[in-house]
Amino acid sequence: MRKYLVRRVLQALPILLGITLISFFIIHLAPGDPLAMDIEGTKISPEAIQIRREQMNLDKPIPVQYWIWVKGLVRGDFGWSFQDGRPIVEHLKERIPITLLIMGIPMLIAVLVSIPLGIISATRQYSLADQCATVFAFLGISIPNFWFGIVLMMIFSLWLGWLPATGLKTIGAPFSIADRAKYLIMPTIVLATGQMASLVRYVRSSMLEVIRQDYVRTARAKGVSERLVIYKHALKNAMIPVVTILALMMPGLLGGALMTENVFALPGMGRWTVRAVFYRDYPAVMASLTVSSVMIVAFNLIADILYGFLDPRIKYD
Amino acid sequence: MTEKQKSASRNVGYEQTVEIESFLKIVIRRFKKNRLAMLGAVVVIFLYLVAVFAPFIATHDPNATNTIMRLKPPSRENYFGTDRLGRDVFSRVVYGSRISLSVGLVAVGIAVTIGTLIGSVSGYYGGTVDNVLMRFTDIMMSIPTLFLVITIVAMFGGNIWYTMLAIGLTGWTGVARLVRGSFLSLKEQEFAEACRAIGASDFRIMFRHLLPNAMAPIIVAATLGVASAILTETSLSYLGLGVQPPTPTWGNILREGYQYIKYAWWYGTFPGIAIFITMMAFNMLGDGLRDALDPRLKE
Image (cartoon, rainbow over all chains, first blue to last red; front, side, top):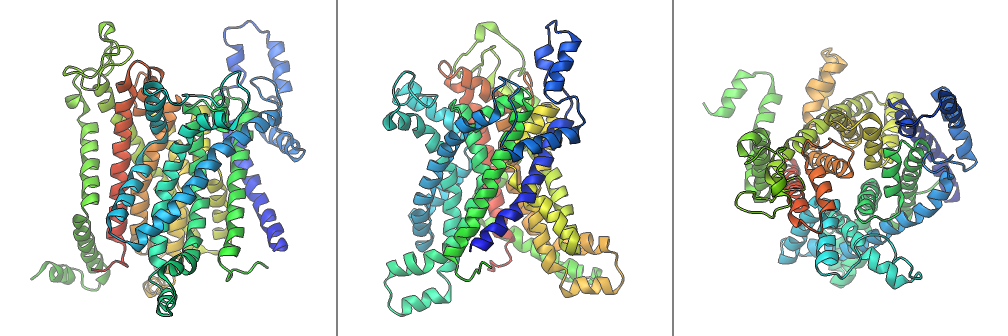
């Protein structure tokens, strides 16, 4: 098991290197100049601009710039933000936990709700409950998350006044879970809906496939109660493809978090990234692409390890 | 002579053609039975008609400002109300459909072309070629699409062409994997071997013989892909990165509407509903096509 883990981490390294290479060249080959915004309309001397350019390493060839960036990364140094001169790592330390929270809670809720819902849907195929679940799934997959957020905000913040519209905490109030929860309810509903909608469909179809198999029939023939057949015998096998889907849903969830953070003005990675691309803050954009990709790669790794628990046929050696 | 016999006698020695034609008929019949899928198809056709005939459907010039008519609620004159400059929201939403629907179609066209090329070469040749191409696919799959797309569009510029390109260039990985998977099993089958035996070129085998047999999942992926491409485009416009105002897009009308959320509920609501309906239609269509094209589901 440990050997397998080490090998998988080592396999992920070239992928991560590839990600940084592609991101770096896209950003640096683009026309335009991160200094253009500072220079515009000001009377900065060309010499001063040249010095600034050298400080930012923008005067060097792109491969050299990449090498400098990678050398920094190995030491855990993402460079300085072009916007405010603060080390990127400090930004990341503030932003990553918030984004993980915004993604994590909805994911947990989605898993907890969609598994029983998918099972009901599958075991009572074509019943009213199943049809309701199918309609809900279509609606949930199709509703654009940013618009859903705006609609919720309009109803619950502006019209009813029950929930705060934007931000993460009441200004001036001490930190409390109740306060934080009030701000997270709407973003969580938005992200959980989309996640649940797609998960329910996968759980349903996976379950439908499993309950038609011989071993399930055998279990029933032995006189095992229906409850045990479904929740013990069938569910475990039905979960295997669902874990894969969860891992595949990660990029979408990250994108959803980005949009949700922007709608609700939450100070996470997504909001930071959007500001960074507007300002051509190269180090920040690089850090954002790298960190978000690492999240996906890490999640795939976790999914692979989970297989081991769900499917003993897979041997790690 | 029946239809089937005719085509058989026309194509003596080309059994494949007959097979495809009859399969197509089965698919169409199955599809017609699926009411949700038919609804999706009708709505998609309707949306494209709206986009094409936008000048005839719009009641006002989408860019004509009218300071007296600022932020007026929906009325008989302005079905969806008016915006911050007194422009007619209905007409702007009608014109906005052109951007979203064309970006969806072109971006998916680019993605399917790249994905099919990479997937078929990878699956057909195998070995080192496969390994290199699939690792590249893994890399592209690990970068969250929206993060990459906003970076590309922000760096290269926000016009409709870069938006299409950025979404297309990041959206091909799923198709590549699908096509590779089909090719791996198809190339081992007898008909592929027969092609090789009579000396057909690799190119001919791949694109004339194997690809038609791998089309079904590609069509489904493409249809569902249009929905996600449209979501990405509207997200970009919403963030202020895609096609720039004053050209109306559903995303940028929604962005403006968000700023006036306290005074004008209609401003952001109607473009949002337009996106919602479009996504819904493509998802229902794609889902119906999946069921209709699935060879495992026999009547």
